[in-house]
Length: 400
Image (cartoon, rainbow, N blue to C red; front, side, top):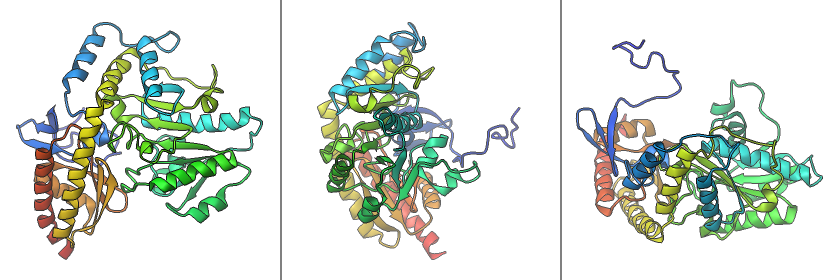
């Protein structure tokens, strides 16, 4: 039983939670028990892409809840088949595997890459090249793929088969490719690692390298995909399609769902017995994800996101000019934007909450703005005003 003095007493202490308790959401806003209104530029960490309590998602959930929740993948699930068709029609992919989260999608991708080479007579090709600053999830394989020492230390020996390279070091990448290399794995736009966008020409270069050496190219679009950059998939800006791609977060609009997409060549060896999931792609998840995908993939939704992205980027650059003692750099792409700060980012987030603005943290002393894709210019102007006030308050942090 929890106590009044410590309501978190029986929760594992894995999170540094803010004090605010939200009981209701609407659009781009969250509300506390006492009715305080906060502008939400976290969006469940780029998950609530259509905002809170979107009527189409609510309707889809309620309708399906009265019919059927779960059967397992022992049986056909028509809504799963429909969404797979839509995902493939709107991407490079031929095949889709549904699961419950981004990190599970990453595990699928890692297994698929190694299975591909084993099935093609090269079982020695197990090494996955990843990049410093990457975040691919919290399961054992995913944290070893990311390589962040804070996430892997204390959990036993590191898994073999992962090569971690500096972000943007082309010569190190070329030197790392060898006879045991299976794939290159990268986020087109890093999220937690610091809102760093990979230049389009670099993604095209990765595609060429993979083709030259017989490697698979894997994109992690768990955070940067599903419209976040103004196109449905971040890789579309470069034209460099992957062989395998992970997605989650906004795919369910707040409902837990993930997916691993692949070409037929990359995924055809994942035959019965090689992989599975109990809950993944169940009728309830597919009803909500199907509604979210249809809304996010609309041309007008993506056009609106691009327009809001241009406005936000312009306004953030102006904010940096006004507060050069607080903001070092504006980073990101689309509505996945980051501010590299001089004061401590966690303290800056606390000050922002005092101004009733919710923002996310990130690596490299960064704060991220991840508003819903439905955000308006008026709401972004409000966010800039609150950031302006936060920068003023943060001057004491720099001086201290």
